[in-house]
Each structure stands twice: as structure tokens, then as C-alpha cells.
Length: 150
Image (cartoon, rainbow, N blue to C red; front, top):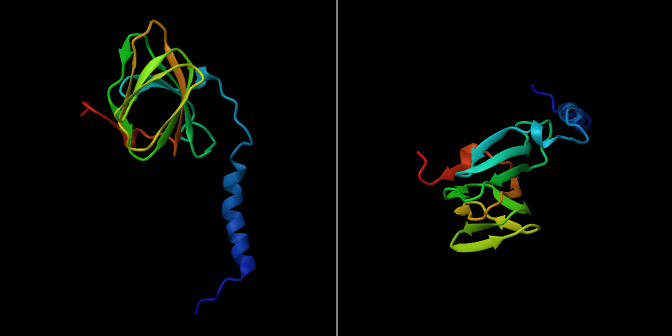
């Protein structure tokens, strides 16, 4: 015969399971851009994952990347299947193609892109286009679809 667990015993079990998980998470994280891994994603963006749960001991529910598109270059059309994105332009100019719209973006501009929406960017200008990309839930290579990539 199984004994039922009291409310107090349930509380103790929950605390024992949850508290150690929180104890491992720091109260804050300071990380320099140069310590962030770099890769090429989004069909051609140079990306440094500034804060990402797969690389860092925190999980704020989103990831943040520092992204560059070099002058006179463009990305391939791509989309994230499940995550939404916010681009916040730091410097430079570019043309973002989101769904069926083309948007000229400049510094101090924020752009929201819903999950599943096709997008690509072009930088026809002489300077780097630089922005922060906040992705929620955190970015995953598994959900990125790039047209023309097998």
C-alpha cells in the first residue's frame, strides 16, 4: 500500500529540486564581446552570441547576438521557425526585406520579426551594418531555415 505524501513533504521535495538549480545561476553576468563565439548564420551575417544559455550559465528566456553585415553584401533569405526576433540597429544602414516589405533601417531603429517570417538583408553601403539581435526563445541552429542551403 502506498503512503500519500503530505503537503509539507511535497514542499520539501520541490525546494530540494528547485533551489540547487537557482543556486547555480549567477545574479548577474558580465561578458566582453571578444569572449563571445563567432559564426556565420542567417544566410551570411557575422554573428557573435553575446548571451546565450548554451554558452553561458544564465537563461533569461532569450539570446542576444552582436551581428555584422559587411559593406556591399547581402544574406540569403532565411527564417526562424519558432522564435521571434528584435533587431536593434547600432550603426550603419541596410535594407531589410521582411515578408513582402523592404525597409530602410538606420541606427536607433528597432525591428520586430515574427516566427516563421522569411527575411534577408542587404548592405549596399560603404560601412558595416551592425545590430543587436534578441531572439526568444533563445536562437537554435536547428530552427533556422536558409533558402538554397541543403
